[in-house]
Length: 311
Ligand code: CP
Image 1 (tube, rainbow, N blue to C red):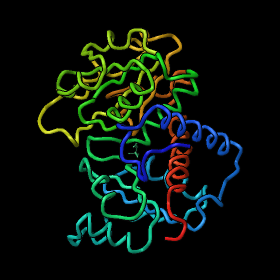
Image 2 (cartoon, helix red, strand yellow):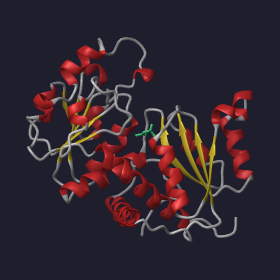
Image 3 (cartoon, rainbow, N blue to C red):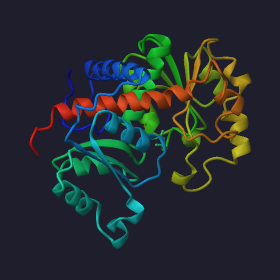
Image 4 (tube, rainbow, N blue to C red):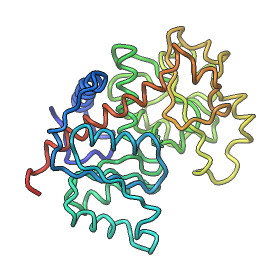
C-alpha cells in the first residue's frame, strides 16, 4: 500500500498507483460495511478529531462513522461553541488539539490552504475535508469508487462535470483524479461559472449543456454555491435550471447507460430535477454517500499506518 505523505491534503500530486491503492482498499471496506462487520482493532487507542469550520452533513458524519468502525476515539469539535468564538486563531486551536495528542485531524475550512497550513504546525495526520474553492479529496475518491463500481474502470470514460465549476472544490479534486486516471473530463456551465484557468486543467470546456452531455458515460452535477458568489453570476434559479439544470430532456443526449451523480447537498429544481435525482437506475447519489464511509475508512487506515505507535 503506497501513500506519498503523512497527510491527505489534495488529490493533485497523487500518482495513479496511490489512487488505485486507496480505491482498492475502499472497495474492501465497502464489502465489509455491507457485511455488517467492523474492524475495531485497527485504530484502537487512536484519537480522531473532526474540526469543521463550515457546515457538513455527509463528510463529518461519515468520518465519524469511519473512525468508529475502525475503533478510534472520535471527537466532533463544535466550532460554533468553541473558543474560536472568543477570538482564538486557527493555529492556536490546532496547537491546543495537538497538545491533547490527537492522531488524526479532519478539517473543513472556508479558506483554501488552511489544512496545508495546519499540517505544518501539528504532529497529527491532517485530512482535508474541503478547503474553500481548492480541494475536497475524499469526495473525489468516493466519486471515483462509485464510478468504478458501475463502469468497471475510469480510463477512457467521458465524464461531464456540470454547473458551478468556479466555486467547486469537488470539481477541482475530481478533475485532478479523473484526468490522472485517464478519463476524458468535460466541464459544462455558464461562462460566468467556468474558472479562468480551465485550459490548464486538461479538460474540455462547454457552455452548452446538451453539447457537453452528448455521449457522456457519467454526468456529475454540482451545487450552485451562492454563498461563495459575489454579484450576479447567474440570473435566477429558474433561469439557471432552464439552461443548466439536469432534466430528462438534457440527460437523453448522454449515453443510455450513463449514471448521474451529485455530491450533495442538492438544490432540487435548480441544478437537478427531482425525477432525475431520484431515478431508480440512473441516479447513484445514494451510493456515493455509502462509498463515502468506505473511502474515509481507507484513508484513515492508510494514514494511521504511517503514524508512530506511541504518541
Ligand atoms: N459532499 C459534501 O461535502 O457534503 P457535506 O457538505 O454534507 O459534507
